[in-house]
Length: 450
Image 1: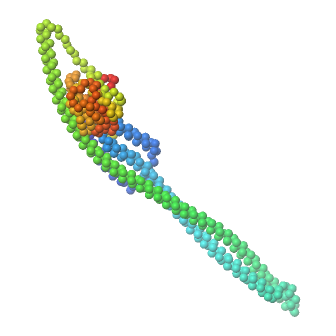
Image 2: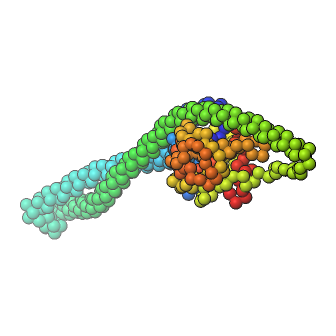
Image 3: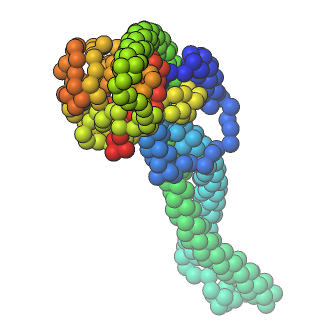
């Protein structure tokens, strides 16, 4: 927590512009009709989201939870957009294919109905022809019966003249030929009628089959169109969600920027106090050194021995570890902010500990600030005085509870419990060291085991 970087003041404005452009681009997704992108593998997509979440955990400890949530939602929606677009294109393709199949089935059905209608007409015509032949044959048989036979011998014997005999015999042959021809045609027509009846039955079965095929094709086309409409609605919902989340993200960026301004103001106030205390300590140290030199001079002039005290420049081990458990999740130094896309200073050292973990004073000193400090949450600042040529102070941030609110504390004394107050995305202790009011790497002051 507590990263200070002047570049951050301009970053939110750039990000808001980027988000606005991104939201505008999202509205064009449904109208631009781009080529369908390949659907993202769910495992790869989840891995990418998990990596982003890990990046947030490791690099956004000074970001508000609301901004972190907005950031995660926005990018989760962005990850879903390509797959949704691909689903829409696939559904549209299926709908087009189903519509084409429906049209083909409908056309085949019309052809089958036309064939069946023509076959029925032919059957009706053939039926009438057979009925007419049967009628003629029946009339002929009735006539023969009424005339009591019409055999060749009867006709010939009833003749009185040879020429009459010959004429009657020729007439009988002609009549019999007509009778045979009529019977043969009737037989042929009856066979054709049977074939036509079979053909009509087959066509009726084919029409029924194609009727069912057309109905099934229509049902598939309706389902495919419904799937395409749902895919389009899903994509539209995702685009709307992205626009809403982009707006929420921009609002959170602005809120985070405001909090940062308050935090910077608090830091400037603290820096001024620590600089004044360091100056006072420096003057006190200079006065003490002058007094010691004067006393040494007097002792030397009186023949007393002298001793020279040398100060060590090795500051390692001046401070103790502020927590007895947990591991260091983030060191002091510059790092790239995944939201603001700028390099920023991580102004302290983060210890990954559970909320409620005891926090101890890293060294003896005076508490000059204890309480709420904007983005830092609950915070304690301890002035350790003039050490190795400069004023040294330490801060303890995002505390869940403060135990000691003022006065002098000793090294290792319980002063608070860790938490996640202020702009913090999870339980941890953000520990800082300041040299004459300016941030310094805590590793310079901690012992090697910290």
